Length: 136
Image (tube, rainbow, N blue to C red):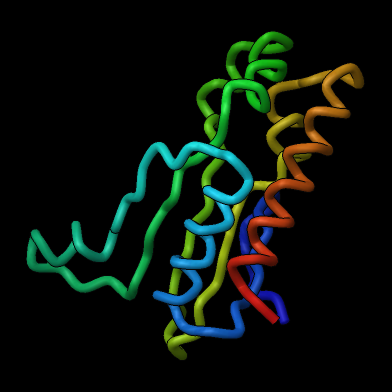
């Protein structure tokens, strides 16, 4: 089952809860040899200012070998790199992983056909990380 998301985003439902999904995603990022640059806990940030937010974390990860070819083609793509995945819990306590489809990123930045192999490779990495995170 998929949840409605804005155009260009891919969301996948997890078979487990939020914490297990985040843990598996972090482990998968490490197993792929990627660097986890940041782990932003939006719910914790909300709590620090007295607001409530269901569990919501953004993991920012990647490596120069994957993203640099796209920035060589069009430097503006750097605003969207490194890669990101959002792990969030909906109102029914179901965990989801959402990421931007690299093809949408390529369209937004006007990357040409020469970038397609890199875009496809990034998409494959994101799919594999997501599948590892959501289980099943």
